[in-house]
Image (cartoon, rainbow, N blue to C red; front, side, top):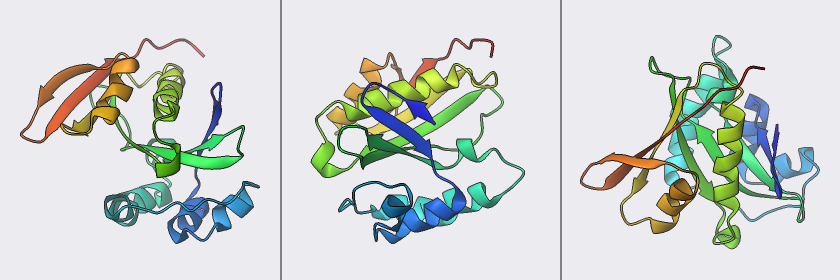
Length: 172
């Protein structure tokens, strides 16, 4: 679990991910949170079914690098968004992140805080040397989140900007 000024970031277990996918507030009940009217995008649904759930179920992998980290507003006691690390670090010690804020919580700086919280956590993970992310070129809010967290643009495709931030690890 990671705590920031306004948020708690909680990595979800396999059983919690299954409840998350139902969008029936069963996960919120388990976590003693107020219900939300969150919806899962088709991209996230596909990622959950094809990658996230199978990777979290794989006991040979560290689930923290595959699961959704749900962000909980301390003030509202509600889930407000999610961040996912897309697998364990590669040979260069890089992890990739993807993220999203629920619609009613967008534009309040929460995602900047969530990404900052994950950066602080990765500083305690000796194997992580950098975080990478990709944003749609039209998603200004998403790349502002990365810029505010010191990511630099390292490349682009026809539709995406690619970003990276180095991590200065500390001994734990």
